[in-house]
Length: 46
Image (cartoon, rainbow, N blue to C red; front, side, top):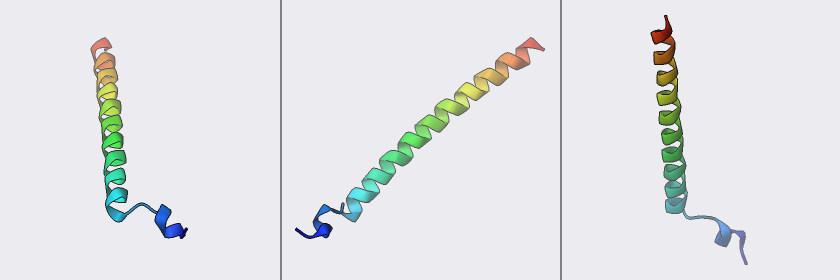
């Protein structure tokens, strides 16, 4: 068996990369929303 047979195709690579990019974007959105909520809470205290 040649090692090439284990390699993902370029399409599979792109699909996996897009999925991980989407996951990162979701995490970033969550983090920025949490950051905004914290900033709002701090602003209301002062």
